[in-house]
Image (cartoon, rainbow over all chains, first blue to last red; front, side, top):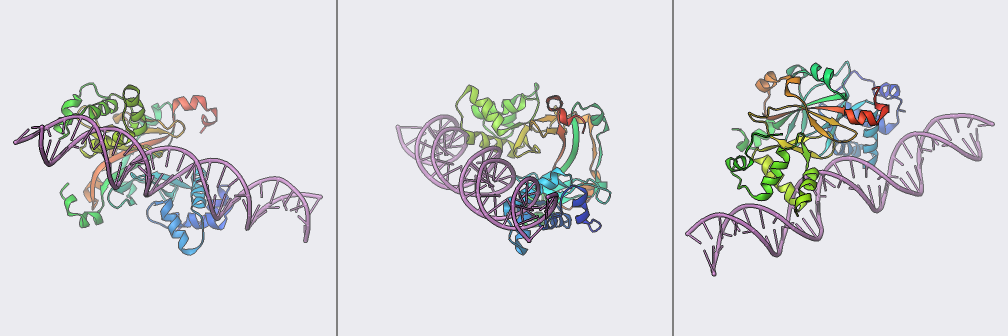
Length: 150
Length: 150
DNA sequence: AGCATTATGCAAATGATTTGCAAAATGTCA
DNA sequence: TGACATTTTGCAAATCATTTGCATAATGCT
């Protein structure tokens, strides 16, 4: 979630003209406290205007390509999208609930990851690190007693 | 990869009768040094015998459910499968090459992950942690000069 | 052998994403 | 402003990974 970002200028500095659709999609991604699926974004946007699903996919691809947003593996079959890490939003781990399929952001302080050794010795190029915890979220736990003793 | 495991007994202790197909699929997963997709496993198995793709999926689901193997997000659209961590194979991070789509295992020593704080304070149940590095592997780097200065 | 249970195959469905192509919108420049 | 190139969007269909439903085959048990 970001209240400090000017999405318009983010687009411009990323070599993307700030078209209405791009802006709206970036706002939806940025104003949410969790990474959303393309479907989530499509549904949200559809509530206020007509837009094609393919357009959503294409804009998401573009934003990922320019490094504005991150494509995040959810643990399920669909990708989720969140603002790319920057000064205001440090890189952080996510939690995936295998029951409701929601992905949530975790505090970056909670996880200390030391990968210097790998970065030093890995023969390829490392562009991104993803840390994801999987399990059952609080809400599903309450609704699903049988998981409470795992 | 595992040279110390008796797959037959692993199946038995997991409440699964060691049918030929289950054994072969577990062997393919276990004898490989990287997590494979269902498609990889299907193709490998198909070289030596007739088997249906759906059967492969079903056996993989079963092995995951019983905790024998792990379903791992690849960074691409398909899941990959590797032996679940145990005494012989500690949990370890993976590297996904966005060009060739291969997933490889990284040394567990290379990554230090401290998640005690999250585990202590998270309101849901955490069952699994996945760490994945994304980028371009050594081989694709060699074949794709344009990525060598990223 | 007879019957229940389990495992497999096959066809089709589903869900997420991508592609091809054409129409609409936008930008550029004389 | 008009003509033309470029970019953005929509629509239909394709693709890819995975799942479902249902029928048959294999296996286990008494």
